[in-house]
Image 1 (cartoon, rainbow, N blue to C red):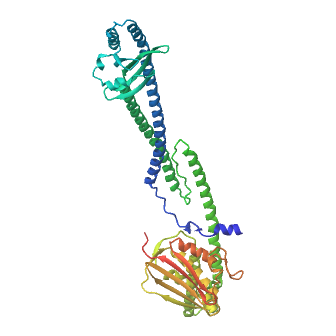
Image 2 (cartoon, rainbow, N blue to C red; image 1 turned 180 degrees about the vertical axis):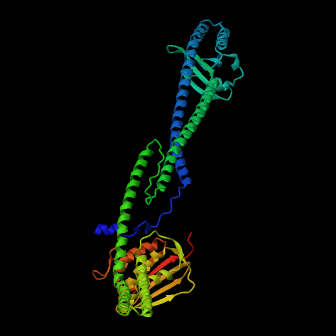
Image 3 (cartoon, one colour; image 1 turned 180 degrees about the horizontal axis):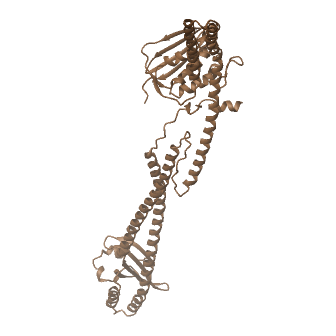
Length: 514
């Protein structure tokens, strides 16, 4: 029973044959913020794109430095080999000149000039003696500062890349000229490295442009793929937002032909389970509402029986009198009129009861609160009179209309008035307040009964909760009333002071039916 009660706690939906009262207010459909979707797409693209860009930049830098190193190593190797090869004839000439004092440097200068003409990448060639004095030089080097020549003196074998103001980028190769421990001088050759520098520079820019283009293409592809993913998620969100568990129809889901389909299948299964749970809940709540209806009718039965029994006694008396004097046509007509009035009274009483018990689709219409209240009082008239309860009416004038179903408001009024009557003793008082305030119509039922304890007051709207003696209530009246009122976006609240009475207030928005 506990679990069953928990299922039926608010929010719930009360269903009669063919119509429903949603106690759970229908949620406003979720509005998809496409700027957030675009932001997610942009964040994913930027994050992954940045990682790819950093990785590609690192790879490109590694490639350019590797290529630069390979090119320079090849050029330095070539420079060393050429310098070593040319050092052999130069050394021979130096040895020969030392053995022949009359030998001039003309032949050495000619050797340098021929070598310079054959190798076009050479900027300069000069030969120094063991003391660092210039012995011979290429013609192109005639205008070079002498301090630059002196810097070559005493250098060990080496080959390096350097930059000079006169020649720009150079590969300088130094080759000591010696046999054993005997040093004859130094050969210094400068190779033009500007083409190599330009080649490496152009290679860098080409690789940089290629890297940028590749990053842009990768980012565009990533943007497209992430867009496909977010579009699939957007379609899924739209389909989920369109799910209506009150409808038995199943919507068509957009097939994505990817992993999103797995998620869609899960949502479709969830939709089916929700609809089945909703159907079972509706069936259970329909039974609850019907039980409360029957209970209310049962509580009215004594009054209905009295209302029917009185005219029946009158009809029986008329029939008896008509049988005694069948020849008196004047009396016959008078008795027939009384019988007709009695039958009409019975018909009215039964019709009121049937109208209250009838299950029909809910009809929204512009009505005044006073009308369903008075209908409820008509059905309770005998019980009110029998117990001597005083009904006080405090109705404001010119009340605005409310948009509702008259039968449901009559049911609410019936439940609240019956609840108040059960709370008061013999000859107690029940006051009905009807007024409007702030675009709303208020209906309050106040009694001077025993009141409700503070511990019980928070639970009065729970299904099956009651403080009445066994057999005097189902514990569903207030719960049903709350559900009916909330279905019109209204409120039902309870106030009570133990020993002084209780007050239940219904607030419904005033206005026209849309």
